[in-house]
Image (cartoon, rainbow, N blue to C red):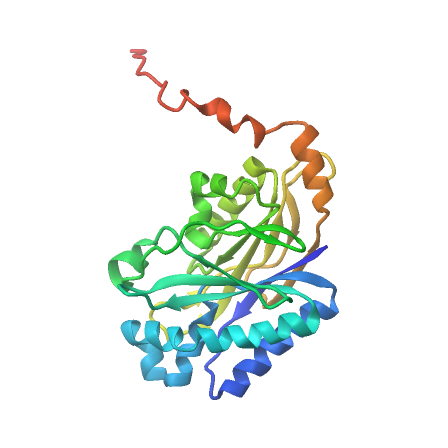
Length: 291
């Protein structure tokens, strides 16, 4: 199976048709190249706010609801494309209104017309202190025709217990948007660590380039990447594919999920199986003066 992860630039949209054409072109490109799972980035849906005008898109509070109002319509676009091309799509996440404050929501869309919803769990400082975005639903393990898939949105990938909750997944998608190289590397390191400890595949996507019309996004630095356990049958670096920073487009990787099962059963190491051996050790450290 081939995975495609996006390095996705955000546009100022002047019409809904422009958005439909953009998404259709991206999906068609990945499908023509043989991809069966497509991963778009965190907050890639923020470009929908520009349909309400750049003044709305530039307003932190108004932009949240301008995007939320259009997410269902965006999902319909993805549903049509997923069915047409026979692909699974992790649609770009965006704010979704709730009874309290908006959440940061990604959706896994299948060619059979199903939609799985995954909200970000842990907010960054900007999201919680300035933007007022909150954590949403529990972590989901989506059972699909191409394997068990989970989603850790950006910052979530940096927390091992969240990753462990998805230990049954064959693939963990990591949609991200980061404003500096340091942020990109935090998420990438987190993605690689989750692949190591869960002995699974992680697929990181990124927003790239400027979005000067949004105080929430600004300039984004990132790249697509697909990571694996550095074990038998996989690259010793743990990197199946990586792109150059801030070059828009898809990054592709061929993935053999049967090899994931083999490594989990009889790898050089068994991180996933030996996770429980940590019990009782994490609090065992004591201070030893060596003065």
